[in-house]
Length: 231
Image (tube, rainbow, N blue to C red; front, side, top):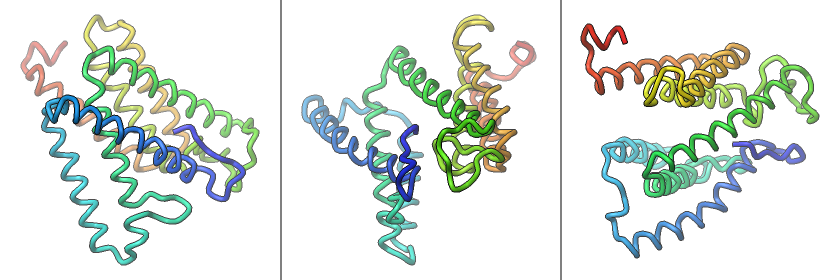
């Protein structure tokens, strides 16, 4: 998320892709060792795997019928975001699904992701105020793009940050002013404010989808009657 190389031709996507491909092999080795030691029982059983499998199948079908086979498989030479990138993300998904089991595990991941997100938002603030020490070809003061290189991609990240914050604010156990709920509310507020600055439609759609999903999950978990509707 935070990697970029201001001295290269492709400063944003390529460094992230190269780092991801490098760590991919370490994850593969760890997964092979786990399966060899514990078998497939180490993989948690969840219907979320079906959604991921459907997405992977759609990506494979798209690559099979693509006009340019090389780009479909590997992506553009300066970005490397083709089907091999999807495989990379599937490996990361499997590693997270297996490694993160307890609430404490997910808290570690959540804190790390939130910290990286705040750094990205802070860097976007530097760009917006003209304090960025790096001189980019595209002036980021009008629509900051942080470490993502594109306002639309940054907006997508903000919608994810908003969804995580919303989940924390709504579903965290404890009182309304517990730390997880307050942290979630802060992430929601930050996401909304920064999204208003970069002004991308995809961000609005992503945040709207997060609100709908949160409402559906809330109703599914607690039901919707007169008593729960006023909580």
